[in-house]
Amino acid sequence: MAELQKRLAERTLELCRIPSVTGGEKAIADHLETWCRASFGRDVRRIGNSLVAGDLGDSRPTVLLVGHVDTVPGQPGDPLPHLEDDRVVGLGASDMKGGDAVMMALAEDLPRTGLACNLALVFYEAEEGPFEGNGLGPVLASLPELKRARLAFCLESTDCEVQVGCVGSLQAKVTFRGRSAHSARPWQGDNAIHKAAPLLAELSTRERRRVEVEGFEFFEVVSATLARGGRAANVVPEAFELNLNYRFAPGQSVAQAERELRELVAGRAEVEIVDRSPAGRVCAANPLLQRFREIGGVEASSKQAWTDVARLGEAGIDAVNYGPGLTSQAHQAGEFCPIANLERAYRALRGFLEA
Image (cartoon, rainbow, N blue to C red; front, side):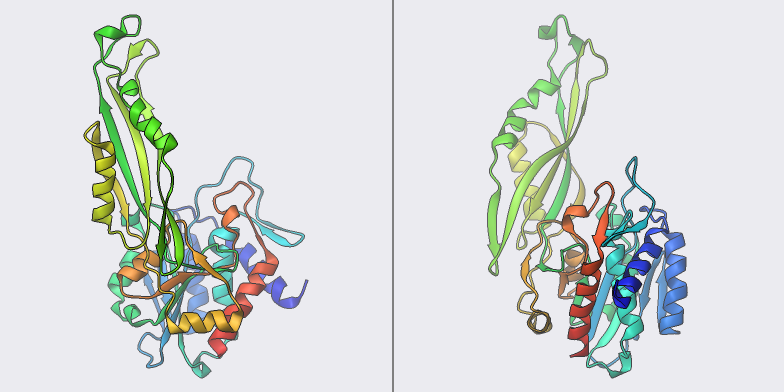
C-alpha cells in the first residue's frame, strides 16, 4: 500500500474506532478539537460538539470542507473497525469518516497561507438525526462569517463524483380513525387499517415523477415507511398510523411540498408534518465548481437523497456533495470504504486547492 493510502486508511480507521452515534459525539469532538488546535492554532471554534477550523476573516475567497462526525446506530454482527485488503471496514467508514479523514489530511499537507483560496474546515454533530437537531444549524448561526464562502464541499458518500443539489424531505404522520369492535363482529366497528387501503394502493402504483433542474434529473417519490395500529389480535382497530416520506426536487419549497402531500391524502386521514428538510439548490454554474471539475476530470450528477447542501444553500453558500465513500455502503451492515477512493478524493481536492 502506498504511503498516502496507508495514512488515509489509518486515519479513517482511527475515527471509526471512536463511537459517535448521533447524540454521543462528545468523544470524537474532543479528539478532533485536539487535532484542530494542533493544526490551526487559535483559529478554532467549538459549538457544542461541532468544530470550525480556519481564519474566517481572511480576504481570499473561502472554500469550506464540511463533514459530519456522527453515525447511525450499528447493526447486529457488525465487525470491529479494521483494515481488510483494499478497504477500511467500520461503522461510518463511507458515511462519512473517510471524508473527514481526507479533510484532515488536506489541512495537514497544504501550505494554507500560500493558497489562492482560504481553506476552512467544519466538523459537525447530529447530521443523521432530525433536521431541527442538526449541528450545522447552530454553527451557521454562531459564525455568520461562514456565509461569505464561495463554495463548500460536503464530503458525503458520492463514489468520488460531484453530486449537485439534493431532494428535500417531508416526514408526515398520517392517522386514520375508525371505531373498535370485536373482530368476530367487524360490522359493529369501522376498521381503521382497512380505511388506509385506498391510499396504500395508490402509493403502490404511483410512478416516480421526474424533474429536471439545470440539466440534472431528480425524482419525486412518496413512500409509506412506518405503520402502527391495533391493540389486540381480536379487536378491530380504531386508529392506524402511517409515516409518509415525500422526497421533492429542488425548486419546490417546503410549503409547496406540504400542500401537495396534504392534497394526496385528500381529507381521508389526519396529517401531521413531523420533520421538514428543504431541497438543496443546484449550483452547477459556480465558477469554482466548474474549475474543480475541469482540473480533476470529475463527473457530476444529481443527489437523490437529502444532505446539508440544502442547509448551506439556505444560508447563501453554494455547496455540493463530493466524497470518497460509497453511496451503496451508507447505513449498511459491515460498512466499508475503498482505500483507493480516499486517495482519489484527496488528490482531486488537493489539485483544485493548489491551483
